[in-house]
Length: 408
Image 1 (cartoon, rainbow, N blue to C red):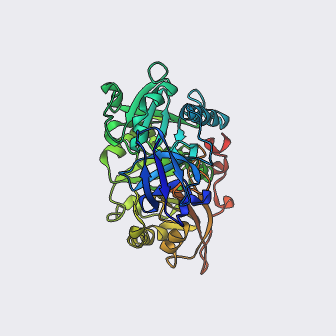
Image 2: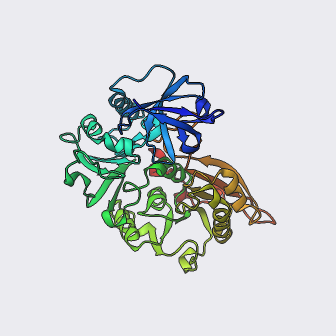
Image 3: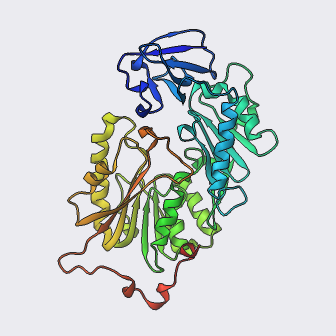
């Protein structure tokens, strides 16, 4: 077994330091390395602090699997995959339920660093992000019953050097499809992002739809294949979705038609950071959602990212009706709610009323601050200088019906 000794004072020796041990914390290594097998981690005094999956060539040298002197059982991987699947069932997530697109395994959040499994109906998308987990692909496949249970799609971070998986398993599917509280979504291969769609925003789409009253206007900037716009339109809003990808917008239009709401949706191809001048985007809107791509992959990118988000907010916030809501999202773990607040500060009178995160099927391990990446800060525009705030009483009688999604 490979043994890794940490430097004196290394924060990684403390369980509260999180599950990642970086190369700078490693003093030396001894013993054979077998990718996929556990390594023993000891502090500077030689005391065992835990066990993890090691890759000496990676910036994150060890991803901890267990703390303490006792090593995990040989079948720890299979046990944890089984526990992750059981945890999703306990959340009411199953392939024949009202939500068929969800995350089954969330890496460190499920004690399985480097492994992500997303479910789209009868399709399992299995992603490995580390060499040790890639080396264990055959154990993962057996545990997930990929040979008989569901259609597999393996996204391995590198090709295994021994016993590679069947080539057909590594071929992207022509499309992924799932249901979400009565709504049906499809993403063709040409428009796929991440493992297909943005499953982490699922509950946020439902939350924002619950704010809708029929007749409201909603703008969804960075809509991908319709996400927030379709959820809001199903609740009775008139929606406009914006994206820079023609393929994504074509899929969004198909999804709107698939759900019988094409007449309440409009799609605009535009770069959210450059071109938002179409007449349909003029406003005012009751709800505006801005969901840009990752803007700060590294801590050093945060300043530049905040400036870009400020420019975006400055263009969108004036289009929100007084009393309306502006949702600014970030999928960059380095961008916190404080950075989002700084981006919207001083444009129009607003206050923050909530911060939403990833869906519950994306658990986060304790002390793993890097595992928190998705933030959706919700702001309300405050009426001032006699500006009228729109309330339920301002809605026509027919518009006061509860929305279909809200009832569900």
